[in-house]
Length: 535
Image (tube, rainbow, N blue to C red; front, side, top):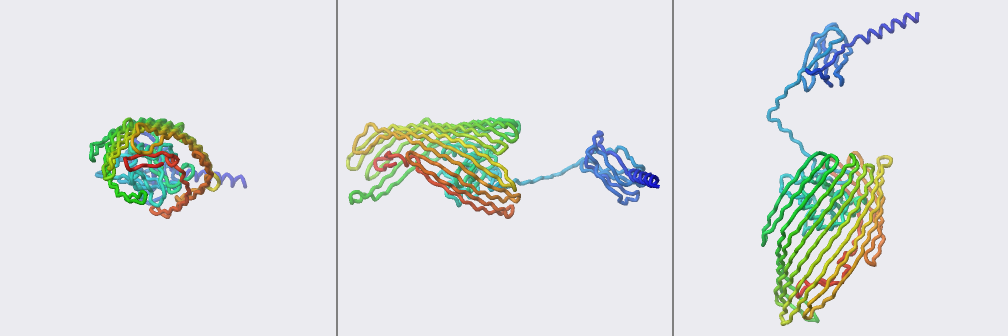
């Protein structure tokens, strides 16, 4: 009895498995069509079942009427309808669909700003829009809250602003970095990241704009040449050229610019000068003229070891071979003439390695020299006369190295730690010659050494909504001359994204201001027969 029931069950299962319709959908070249919709209907168009073709074009319908209608549909092919009987319909060939689009315009917008781990990432090409923006520096001045005053960029709500390149600081000073950005085409910049309180892995405290240059990802060769002309008292201008050769593994950049600079300024001075209880009414007019050629060169080589590991090396040079300036002063106290000749040279080399496992290491070296000589001749209202000549110069060598590591912890927290070291060696000298008249002079020859060592630990978390939080502490040991100082700098930031158009940021940053090179000098510089600069 049990054997008989088992045979009946097997027969019933086999009968159910046989109640299927199978087939295969191909195109007119016998290639299988994936994702075609097959609708099963009765002859009177009553819906029964439906199926989707597989990657190999086959399909199965779990019903088997005596006679049926199949409708086969696909976006790229013409709809086909067949009448069939039996469980195997064989091959069903579809003909390609012809689309005729008339006056179709597709519009899309790239996002103006993205929030990435607490950073505001701006697409500078979108930000510039249809305006006239010639280089990366001019594009930075278009960022919300960023203004330019006397050649310096400021960010609203912050005490000071630092601009860095590719996520790491440079030993180039502000003016040298500005020159580089003014010679960088806008299409070489991937984005600009604004941080009101930079995390310690950037090795910069306070507000930061990080200019991220594009990486190589295809085979291409591109270049451009541009020129500019300015007339303000004098004719001046310049020319810049650059090219970029890239492959998926490497890229080579060259940029060169030459600028003919000519400037003239007027300064009026009115002074109530008290000396030995007597007030002197000083009035004078000063005319300042300057002219020079400035040459800027940058070459960079990028190598992608793989999709996540990158090696970058770059050289930047700036040269002003013959800078001449003249100061002509007239007034009721003295009339003077100052001629000054200056030659400056700057070389900077940067090496960076980024690992996909969260390890970054790099170094930076800058060598700067300035040679100058100056002559002054002053005639005073009382008939006296003073004159002198000066030979002076400055030489600076700056080195910096860093190493950073980032690890992923439980519950999407990130732990970061790293170290950095910066060393600067400065020599300034000034020698007077051919001194006449009653004018105080002092020869100087000073040498300074500055060292900064940092180590930090940070903790951060980024949420899927875009909200992020980070806290860190950085220990620092600083020396310049005989000055020594230990310090700890806490940092914290919170970015809350309420909606794609509204976000809130709260940040805490700390910093110290150390004496600069010139604050450590004891030299006296004469601008004319009346005005002196005391270091």
